[in-house]
Length: 630
Image 1 (tube, rainbow, N blue to C red):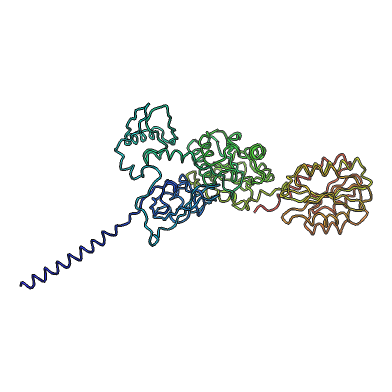
Image 2 (cartoon, helix red, strand yellow; image 1 turned 180 degrees about the vertical axis):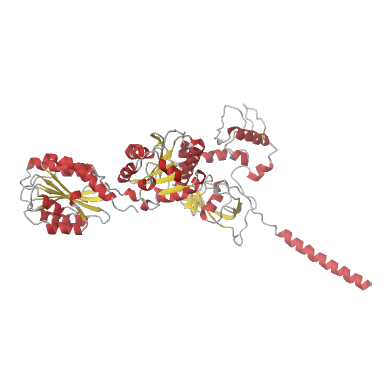
């Protein structure tokens, strides 16, 4: 019996010693606690160079700004960057953050539901990866913030008084944070839909600490360091991968109502946030239409997303009908001008938002807009149902208006409450500049060669009239090295290249060059002149350019024009034949591209040449736009 008791005692003793050793081991290895951070915490506010943190859900929201792609400026939301990079989804989770050197530039992009912004430079960067701890690295359980207290420490002191240090001239008054919270809740109830504005401290007023927006509610009082950081907030130069000049035509008709008008404004604000507005990227203006259109602000009024969203919030409903056709015409004539901030190197885009259907016609005005290079998108919300279609002035109006009828340029939204789903698809299409087909127009996409008859029958005075005709036609085109280019050949029995396509790149230089062409005088070998132009002028045309030959003659050719004309047609050169006085109509028809009635013109006197300019331009553009829009 005694032996059993002794054995039991020894077993208990050994077990106790072992347990104590295990407890001692465990006490030597304290459990690592992953610190929590909020969605709005910027990497620059955390002093630690490398840390693991846990992000909450919901950090995909555009209000948590992110700058850069892959490597992010430290002014970015840590958790927002994690979602953008794909390390987290919008449900949150743990991440590993490493600080790195500042970059000379940060490229904005859209990824995983987050639009990051571009930034020229910033003093510090960071990268985000999955939370796999490195061997031998100890990560902090409590993060060190650049402000005097961490958010956790401030939260623990919500019942303590905040005392501002007294100065010789003022007496500090304690302010209870719980009282401030209560006041803010009351103010929020009073202001309803308005956002808190930044309240700047004043040296000559009450010594109470001032509050800054909603962050004071979440994190306590904002220290001076935070004030300086706010002042240094970077202004994006815009996304260079989306350099477009954009006009939104918003529906301000009475039938819309204030509620749906607010939804429309929120849609605009979301688009602005996703676009990353700036002088190096997209610029945007807004036109509101009802009975008549009016510009709310143009392309150069607001140069960043923040200012643009604030301006959108102030737009008020105009009322009236839904005259979208009149609005498109207004934008074509008035909006995309240099005075309004239009940039020659940026495609022009017009997005028309429409409640139901337009109360006027859009087909003709939209055609003119497309011909001037405007890429028209249509967003139709709550389209006409079957019994309402009788009230529409134009059936299938959206397809008659948009840049292409393949569905790429039109959106049909079933309900105003589903409009927000269109934001990202629209932004993606607007920024895909290679697919903005209407950027190439009849006026900016050709190499035009003038073949000018300088024979003796023309005479010096009439030759100057011909040159003026050439100048009048040239004035109608957008001339540059990347737009329409102009060349000229003068011929008699012989041929002379006056200037080639690569000689002059501005309209002023072209007009001066035309004015300077000297009259040659001689015979009329039109066939040889066409052959010469194909070899010396059009052989140097750019592959992506339309090739237009405009030949002006006052008489029948001494040589055969058939073979030369056929060679031009086979090489894809669109030929216009302009005859004056004694020119032979049958010969003009042979030279002209089929159908001859659209490419052959005749006037009885040189002084009447100017009358054919509008018709020639119209036919050039009609032919360009007759190409399938699919």
